[in-house]
Length: 213
Image (cartoon, rainbow, N blue to C red; front, top):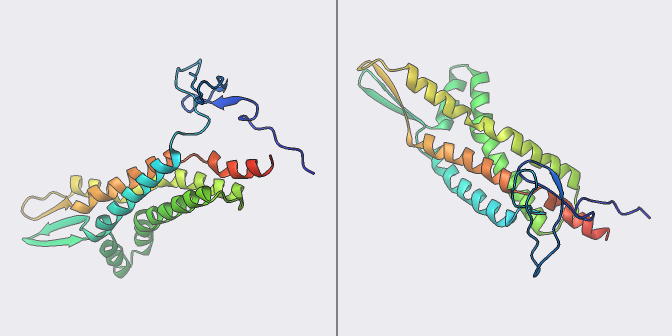
């Protein structure tokens, strides 16, 4: 029989979410435990308050913004009086047809695949935590860490649009303007980043910890 693992919570310790100092937990009063970090003064919580509800709300909001981000035009190019609008996917198709496979692949992965994969992973983690799943907690934690790390790189498409708008401005000859999809896409990236930060990965291990009690 395996010896129960001593965790910080079992030892009566709480890690500060701001400065990461390991602090002794205050005794419960009226069923509520409230204490302050002695170093930075932040309120200590054993787990992030309402982590699941907040993360679900942010994930749903990101899913809503994801649709117009891919349907509406990302850029509007005006050249010699002719106006052409391109979505993210039509831009990928253009680079594929012109033979620029590496650029098309980078845009597809950063602007379409990564945000969608991040939403799927967050949904999977939320559902597994709510179902108190014991399935491979270490791998699920790795999934979360990867999701949190790669989320910011989805802003690549916004950076490209910003550079193009700043550089290509030839008056009546040619101009490039950011389309309405740029704002929605930026919202998707920012919201998913906040959603990843609001999710508490320690919830993944809580079900396994209770199983060994």
